[in-house]
Amino acid sequence: MIKFNNVSKVYDSNGVHALDNVSLNIEKGEFVFIVGSSGAGKSTFLKLIMREEMPTSGSIIINDMHLETLPRRKVPYLRRTMGIVFQDFRLISKMTVYENVAFAMRCVGKRNDSIKKRVPYILELVGLADKANDHPSELSGGEQQRVSLARALVNNPALIIADEPTGNIDPEMSYEIIELLSEINKRGTTVLVVTHEHELVKSFGKRVITIDDGRVVSDSDDNRFVAI
Ligand SMILES: Nc1ncnc2c1ncn2[C@@H]1O[C@H](COP(=O)(O)OP(=O)(O)OP(=O)(O)O)[C@@H](O)[C@H]1O
Image (cartoon, rainbow, N blue to C red; front, side, top):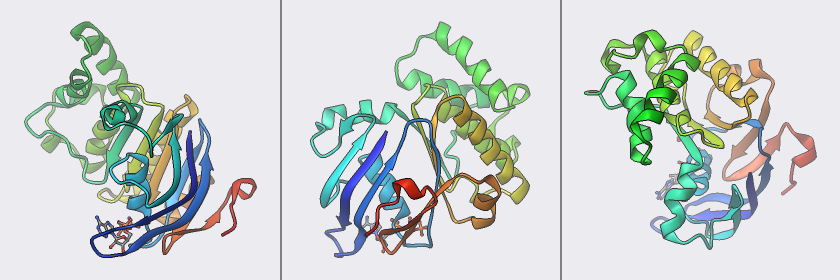
């Protein structure tokens, strides 16, 4: 599902070595936390997966696509295999909860009849069926993050990428969001969560990959740990 082979990333503008010879494998159906301090290279890692950035060297395979050679016109197809959850939710304030989620389906050309069936199902899954007609400003942070998760899930991606999904919500709600991601993972979706929150990570007992100064310095899944 995600395969990095000796991937390095140096930003041209300032010469920063954001990732240094990273090799790892994440299989279909896994739940993985990516942890590391500020500036460690976590966002760079995600940007490479989404092909927002290209590696300086090494190879990346995502959902069977070789990113170095993937033509630009196929990048939207790559991104449709992923659902992305951001720290700051990125909901459309003028739209209701229902419309925010439906919009993600409209963007990929889904028809009204499938939208009408799918959106209520997904809102039920994230526990927001009774908030469908509310606007984001009427919701708590945790609820807004669940809308964002519903939007990421609605097109049935193979992979969910959550970038600091609990950064703007309180600890109890944070736990609930990770629980929900864990439930979604049990239904077969691969989940990748970037976070600073070590306590939260510990309580879930999932695979944890630690990045420090651009390198993978530990991987709780020893079998796949690649020594550098
Ligand atoms: N677009 C860019 N251009 C130049 N340098 C960058 C760029 N993006 C990140 N960097 C640098 O690369 C290094 C890794 O940054 P990155 O954003 O990947 O870290 P991070 O682990 O996500 O940090 P944080 O937790 O603070 O978001 C940092 O030194 C950063 O300044």
